[in-house]
Image (tube, rainbow, N blue to C red; front, top):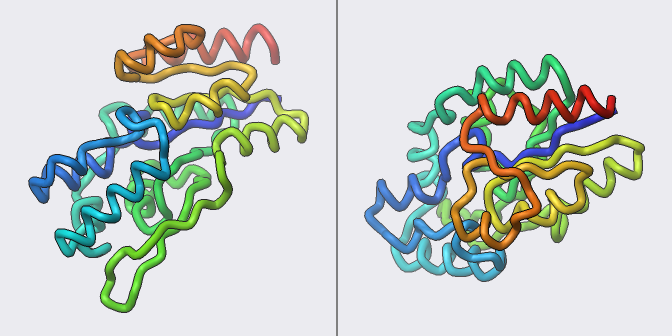
Length: 203
């Protein structure tokens, strides 16, 4: 039996931090796991910027409330769930993801959490598990699932490597160049036949 493990941002929704950067005008917040492979380095930089500019969790969730899924994402998810089970495995945070997951039709989400003080300022982040995407796939494989992994960034690569089949969706050129073993798709219509071929050839 197959199950799909997919990233959220860049695959089904816009990048949250880029949207926050556009709203606040803080260009450095545009950096994502497409740019910086070390997630801890990236998050420490983000938290330092939030502290410097006194940006609260509410400031960020106000931006997220205005965001919508990528065009075609909801229809694709409806198509996908008709065929195979899905878990969204993301390095986002529960406090960020709730509005977007609701708009996506509430797929199962594995993600992390934030530490927030009494003033609503983000003081830290709490990983559900280190290298959580890869370890999610490994756990599912231990239950005798066959896994299709989908993602777009450096932090998805270990998940794609651990899966039986890994697929890149709209990745940046640097990720394509570094990991040529994965097929690259640029829209949902390209993604569908790849998934259908996998499900059809090895049920």
